[in-house]
Length: 125
Image 1 (cartoon, rainbow, N blue to C red):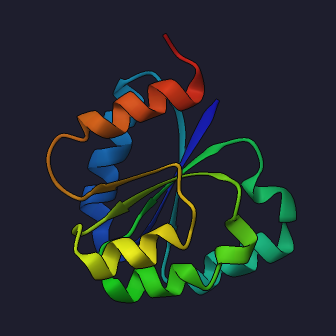
Image 2: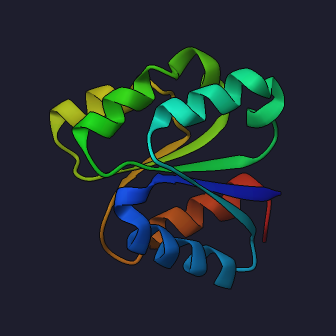
């Protein structure tokens, strides 16, 4: 199963580091870097099958970006989404669950929890 990592250009270094870590765990990975999530919205509208069988990791670095992403709720509901948010404050968690992710973690650390979830979602042993 392919993993698609989606993030804003503001977190380019973190995104690249995460991409490399996922690749090292032997997952087929593709990254999509956006200047804004309006570009992602247009991509989904243009290609409705965009969010089909892949696992999507959405790296969100700010409240503003999370709010932009919640505008896509109806388009990504029911998909295999993992959400990485800046903190686990009540505000962030309330906004994050609106996207119905399979898993939510925070930015920081070594992402071991993320890799355990990816392993289960992809069916890897």
